[in-house]
Length: 238
Image (cartoon, rainbow, N blue to C red; front, side, top):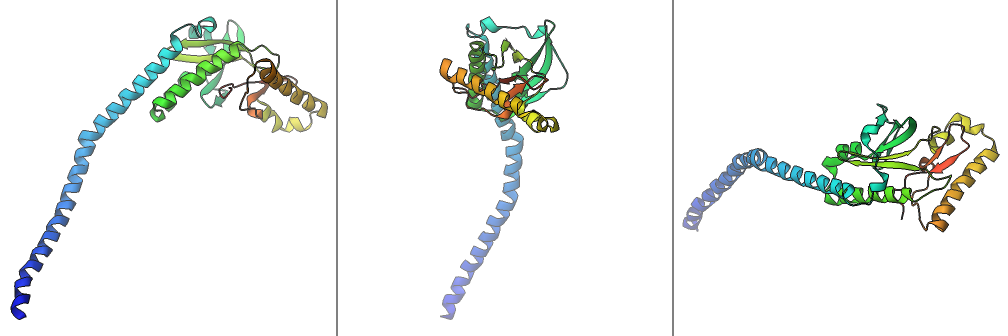
């Protein structure tokens, strides 16, 4: 029995040394591999992702600027005089107050939003954005109702992509409802505003077979006196 234990001792020592060798290899090799990946592989991945984003954005711009889908609505971005600070933010656009041929308009700039979000967008996100932009342009160009925001035109010149819209100087109904002045507003005026929104919805649903899909106080704009309401933001309409 004693000779058997003595014969097993070298094997035990070998296993210990092997374990130590594996541990040391792991501790030494892992940082080397991590540094190699960071220096060699990650830049290539970053360049590949940047190339994909640029290709997706290029495809997006081509879809907007080719064909005749938006040709009747074209407005040159050079003819718009935008104020420096935005007046609002949408799901896919930054809104600025601007002047167009001497008239005050609202400009919903998609380019600003694209630039800010390009790092987080994949191909499907770019495609969805292009579809939403073109859908809103085409849909609004066919709508004429006193309680729907009017589309003045569209800028589809790369890189300046924007909707040029009627300007409502009273802000959104959400802001109006949460403002102290709204509490002093006569009930008749509140009911009338609600009826105006209803008339706009009836026009969309019955006359145009369109479901807005996102009716809320943020998507209803008012004039300065709070007597005229207009539905806006048709990005979710079907």
